[in-house]
Each structure stands twice: as structure tokens, then as C-alpha cells.
Amino acid sequence: MTTFYEIPLTPDPQTFTLTLSGVTYTMTVQYRAAGGTGWILDVADANGNPLVAGIPLVTGIDLLGQYAYLGFGGRLWVQGAANPDDVPTFDDLGVGSHVFWVTD
Image 1 (cartoon, rainbow, N blue to C red):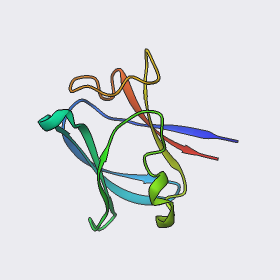
Image 2: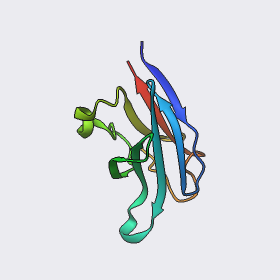
Image 3: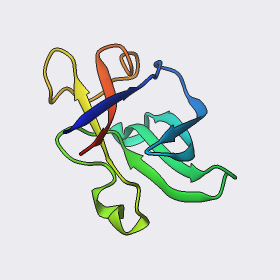
């Protein structure tokens, strides 16, 4: 059975700790306007050691798919509320666009 967990976010740069599939991570979300980059995610372990950095929050793909060798134990998806393909804008992350942790 597939399980979805929405990661609670607000449209602000933020660093937070959360447990996903029994593992504690520190995540940092920040907005980079240069070149139209948008929202970026960094993932670190519970001690703050970087695991992956600079992941753009885009739709239609498992953001952690290319890092499967790190054994995250789930998938990370971004989806717009009005349209699943709506990429998060500066002021709608967590409002109109949501980030989900998905496990099977």
C-alpha cells in the first residue's frame, strides 16, 4: 500500500529536522531567484552532514530517484494543488505547491 506524507512547508527559507521512514534528516529549503532557479532542497543526516544538495523542487519526478544508492526508503514528490505540474513559485510553497514523501 502506498503511503503519502505531506512535508509541512511555508513559502520561507527554512531548515528543519524530520523523520522519514524511521530515519531523521535535516532539510534546508531556500529560494534562488538567479536564473529562474526557484526553490532548492538540501538534505543532511541528523548530525548535519550533507547527503545531497541543490535539488530543484520540480514536478513530475522523484527528486531522490538519482540518489537511490543512498537508501532513502521512499520518494520525494512536488505537486501543485490546482495543476499537478505547477512548479512552486516564491510565494506558494506549502500553499499551492506541496512536497510529499511517498513510500510503498
